[in-house]
Image 1 (tube, rainbow, N blue to C red):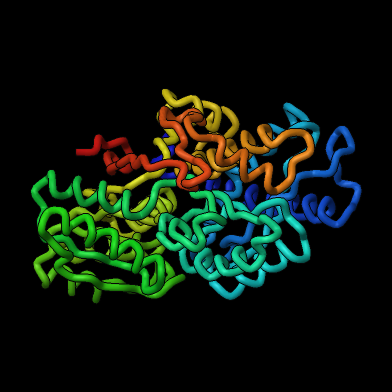
Image 2 (cartoon, rainbow, N blue to C red; image 1 turned 45 degrees about the vertical axis):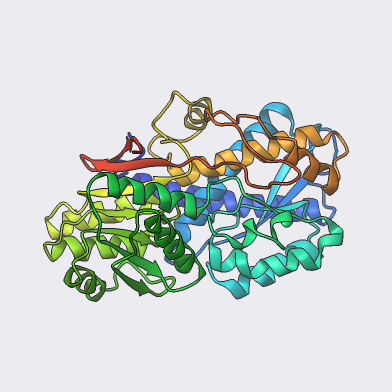
Length: 411
């Protein structure tokens, strides 16, 4: 089955159950390692415990499930095949923040202060990560860093916090620039924005308007929705505002539930304007929602959609990273977010390998910075260095065709 196609209900259910079970097992394993229990590597070396706080419950939980599942799958491969890194297993200690800032802050403080994790990893979302950044500065003498957050926002890419975060994925500014250029090349000039009403939405909104400014344009109209709004909510008011304003193409800065709801209500109102989303939306989960609604409403809701991506298509086996991911992922379960999690784990594992058999946090940071010029298997080298903690700048584009995501060449 292709990654963009709709998995049947049984496959989706099994994928979610497997993710939940794996999360529990790995949290318990990591907790035992962190507390001095008997969960150890095959050579009796203590495990390297990685701390994760992200969304594991609520309407946006697929984001956290898929990201952690992708990373866990690679760590599991390394632990099973190689006995870990230098004899040390890599273990995940996972906490649920529900995609809300306050739990993210509490979880992060516990992971650093009580659990003594080696580094933070696989965080999801701008509103959550942004609120945890002051903690990294507070604990800077402990050399704790956050690696591979699932957000393209600016705060962790700029001083004073850029030294504490290693961003693998391209930024939202780079994604929105690619989407604006794409629409401009197709003749669209009157762009509207649908934005989540928080730091994530504002970051994407600024990125779109900065990209439009290069063409002497600005967004024609901006509408918002609240964070963690479910797919079942009505978005027809936002549709009407944009449509009545004369918007001819839309960029949505959202997650899969409300973004799919906006598309659903657009198409059901007879408005067929092209709609684009950023990679954070989780394009596969969004398409799943639209397929389900299409069957119920007896109308194809998947037409004329575009999505920015920060990893290649999980169908594109030309890339070694993709081929290895697919070889260790259940049929029908490969996703863009899962592949991103796999990529994140590949990168930190290489850094741990370079940090040596007795790694410290400082050695790990230096190892991450040494990855400049190293290609993790996507045809693009990382650009980390002592003066830059931004790994990739590349953006891929996809569009819908026959109910699935296919690659689209950028203009």
